[in-house]
Image (cartoon, rainbow, N blue to C red):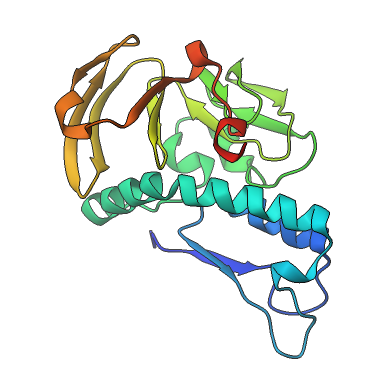
Length: 212
């Protein structure tokens, strides 16, 4: 697949109101290319033009975006090695589940929407709750983003684990062999330096900890 993809946030043509533009920013949070771009013939959509309510919301989502750039860099290096896309349809990782081929709106957002999670446990990074997969659930929150059990999210200042993890991560310009046993770092502690270690479930982590 093509790893570096994105969209014109807000859409290139036609009128875009601030609510729609905000939803674009939320929807594309993990897109490798994150760009506000509009035709000169359409309405201006520089973020500072909007009401202070929307300026605050845009600040929050941009703070979150900047915080997860290290995670995107890790996935970009994986894509470089494995030739796999960074953003994937559900069926890419779960081809054995025929239902995944019918999920074509999983990246849409809303106040509360239903999402289908594959089997296993999943951590809702916005609400700080744990969900069991292989089911359709109400996501809650504006941005339904989940971390699969035994995976890690790299943020600007922390590694956020959900369950155990053993594998390679790309951090501080190098590949690091990392092992977390659910309580402490067993391998890679020296290489990561003083970066904070967070156990999502134990520490009740949510994105609010980043944008607060």
